[in-house]
Length: 135
Image (cartoon, rainbow, N blue to C red):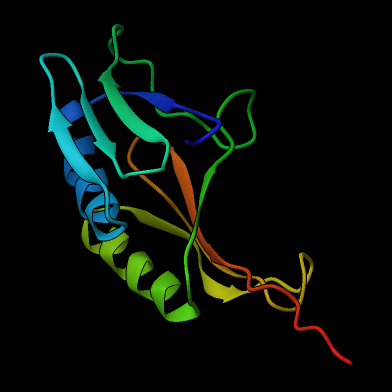
């Protein structure tokens, strides 16, 4: 059971956000459930992700670096999977913040990409394999 049960995010245009999130989360193995005023994705053993429509109009997108949301990182099994998910997100209308690359400032194995949706919600796809033990 995950420590965090669910993560709710408010979006300006729910149908547009569904179009951006659904291909990515489906590719990650999540299953979508539509409700009257929200949509959610769940995968066994993972945190449920829920999108809610904004209650106020014209609030504008979140701006990275301001108080609030920073980013959500999805850990995947390979660099190729980072690349694949990055391409899926681009095709779904996400904007690349940083293309897939190594991040030696984290460690020499850390490979990731960063993208933002129309709401300024930022995600990271990352592969960080364990350090190989030497004798």
